[in-house]
Image (cartoon, rainbow, N blue to C red):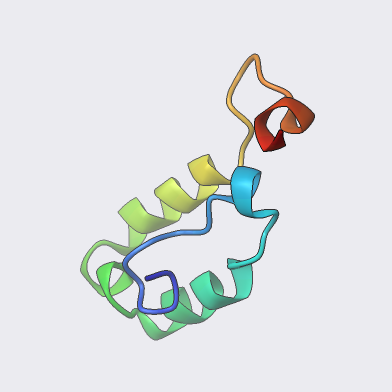
Amino acid sequence: MVAQGYAVDYRVYSGGAYVELMQKAAAQRAGLWGVDYEGMRQLAVRRAQVPQGCEVETIKQ
């Protein structure tokens, strides 16, 4: 789904495993990247951050 542009890499959980696929989809304006690039960009930024009050070590356990 990430490679086709219908999802973003939720880096808190994936450890960045899908970042390159997401970047390629964004560059090609694939899937939702072609429909609402700015919305997808903002979602990707939010999914790259650890939620307030949480520590990465806690989330990954």
